[in-house]
Length: 267
Ligand SMILES: NC(=O)c1ccc[n+]([C@@H]2O[C@H](COP(=O)([O-])OP(=O)(O)OC[C@H]3O[C@@H](n4cnc5c(N)ncnc54)[C@H](O)[C@@H]3O)[C@@H](O)[C@H]2O)c1
Image (cartoon, rainbow, N blue to C red):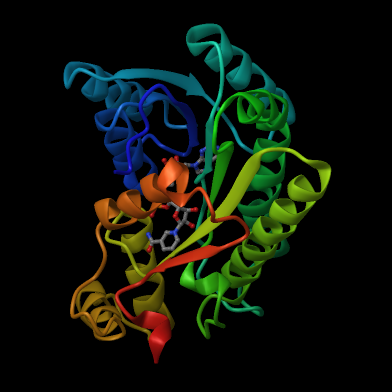
């Protein structure tokens, strides 16, 4: 179940965090993984850890906001592994400022990474996913990192929410577009609650600041109480959902959103 034997996966923003955990899990269930990130040292380290554990991995420098960077990264991936079956659009940044507080430069940066990065990644991977989709029984797969912030409004993160809401509907729309065109590519999104990664830490910092304190431990606890399951998520919680969506076990899923949020949006 949930195996990725023989599949090649490209993961953006996978030097650390959710992407890093997913690269490791994918490799452990049979995939060859390509890690693209701006954090070169950390990315090479993650690839090395995968190889040390017996997996196959390649690190490539990638700035998801740049079309030429995607083209070079895809070339390197194809040169190394010969095909592409899975794309994970995972690279993302957080802002955590209100509509009045964020600068327009911060907004443009957020859009560049969280939205343009997803569009460019999808376009760069498309010819390769189309090719492999035609050859495999259940087609190729794209998984996009949305968020609970792409499903419900967030009083502290309106700009981040806007980008993640865009990812949610881009996922459904590309699933429909590719279906209409006869491409055999499934597209699904995943919607994490608060996950204890570097970005998770940033959310605690921003929330503390919004409350006029530096007490991130208090905001971490407050964040925990928003999750009925009684804890924050860890990167592996999300990696398992991504591996499912990328695998043939999700063969009848496209245009869907998998919510992995400890009950955050159930209330
Ligand atoms: N942590 C959470 O609570 C949470 C919740 C919901 C959704 N998400 C989403 O999950 C994804 C991963 O987040 P994470 O928690 O692992 O955060 P993280 O900050 O640990 O990882 C994000 C990765 O993206 C990379 N990245 C940033 N800008 C990039 C660029 N221009 N080009 C290439 N790579 C770039 C970073 O270097 C980093 O490795 C993001 O899309 C995030 O919005 C996170």
